[in-house]
Amino acid sequence: MLHFDDIVFGPIFSRRLGSSLGVNILPSKGKLCNFDCVYCECGWNKDGAVPDRRFPALAEVEAALKEKMSKAAAEGVPVDSITFSGNGEPTMNPDFAEIIDVTLKLRDQYFPDAKVSVLSNATLLGREKIAQALMKVDNPILKIDASSQELVEKINKPVGTYSLDKVIENLKNFNGNFILQTMFLRSSEFDTASPEALTSWHDIVRTLKPRQVMVYTIDRETPDKTLGKYTVEEMTAMVQPLIDEGFDIQVRG
View 1 (tube, rainbow, N blue to C red):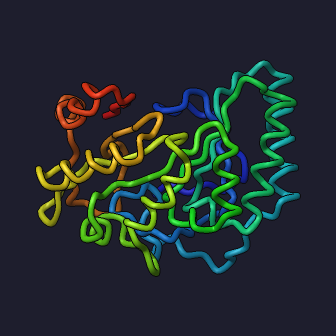
View 2 (tube, helix red, strand yellow):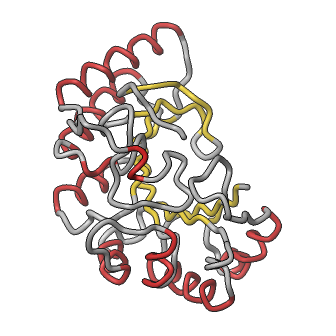
């Protein structure tokens, strides 16, 4: 499965974000996440566990960003996005808010047209410092894969307490200034796009009114080998009612 050893890597091409400089602020050579998603490209949490669970500190991240960004700028390498994802949930790093501030400063210095993006499962939005940091970045890409608590337990498998209703309430504080990300998939045990689930998901989108919605399906190796993907045509049909209502929706196969 996919793991990142370096704090900053790339740029690599992202189907969503273009030429993307990746940032991993989680322990290297393994996985640390408060979800254990059935589709995660980093594998199951238990298989990615590492003895050294030390998070990269603020100074380490700043030095790695400065080195990589200055080199890319000097060599004329394009950078469209500086993207936090990595080996799990980036907001778990205790220095997350300060790291975002440093990243924005360095972005302005080296790649002022680049967007700072954070891919997050939105679980820690109840912490004011984390929510405020996410509100500062250009692209807070926040996840809701499942439209019911029951589906969340089957697909995302939260580690610890998780309330979908609470996440939705926290997302309302963004006043629509975020990108909602949803994975559509199915198996013999669930279907995130069943008629009931899809209707509920439409209602969530209408409630939150995100500035953009990204829907996608399985693209890489998954820890659960029984999962089925959807075609672009199928997903487009699923979201067409929202497109007709004026929502900006990107569909990726």
